[in-house]
Image (cartoon, rainbow, N blue to C red; front, side):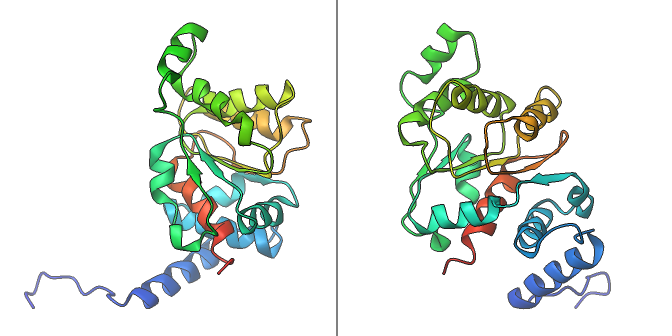
Amino acid sequence: MAENMVEYLKDPAAIYAQSFQTVREEAQLDRFPEDVAETVVRLIHACGMPAIANNIAYTANAVAAGRNALKNGAPIFVDANMVAAGIIRRHLSNNRIICTLDDDGVADDAKREQTTRSAAAVERWVPRLDGAVVAIGNAPTALFRLLELIEAGAPKPAVVLGFPVGFVGAAESKDALVESDLGLEFITLKGRVGGSAIASAAVNALAGGLK
């Protein structure tokens, strides 16, 4: 091996174990019950930032509700194809992953309603929203619209995994989720940080113990 080549760990199982051990050593997890802590570890693993543990907000039954929904075959609604791409299918129980962003008519609906395609796409979820798992990892407007629809009487999902990212509306949409009185089970990362990888990691964390 050339002198300037770096020795690195190659065994997949060892990499996996060492990664999660490092997260547990560096993150502040004491305030979480064990099932939530396991989920937070996976969220940190997805982004490499132990400090996000300080900004996780959740409801006590979110993990249990999400796991039960997935076990029972509930659909998973996502706001972006990147979220769908990150979900590990082999951990699922015949759950359908649904992204309506590119459905026919969504762009026209968005134009007519003077909103984003992401917000217009959420309206397509309503017929199957009851008891579903929702994972939002891109658009704050998707989370805002979800909350508006539920407040107007749309069915409640089993859990909302709210991780929209960005500088306009991301922090505010997650605050709206946390502060809502809609009785939703949720896990979210307050502030601007989020993204598709974290949202899909949240789904994977809930599904990982099912098989």
